[in-house]
Image 1 (cartoon, rainbow, N blue to C red):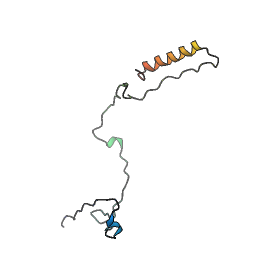
Image 2: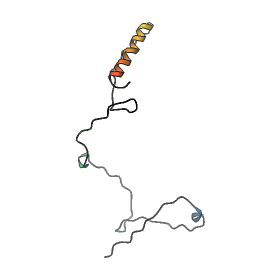
Image 3: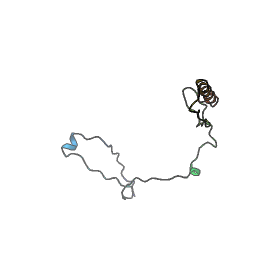
Image 4: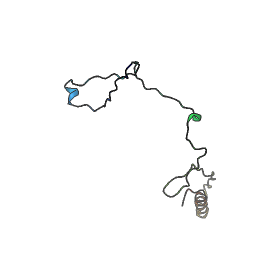
Length: 104
């Protein structure tokens, strides 16, 4: 049996040919004649080849975020905290963020 004829079809935006009734309807079929339909496939992670055994996220810089980082929880200041306590808290938080690599 001869190989099936293959024709490339290009999808174009609406033009004058459509309005004049010159467009040709197209039906997509598989080589065996059954209708072509889009399907979603699920591939097991183990079936993927060429993936690295480990992945080390890039180090964060001022221009690019590195791996996902989470800062430890900070206790809230008391509602009646004075300015020196607020300043100390802000400076301590900035120091921790710098140590975690989130700030330069």
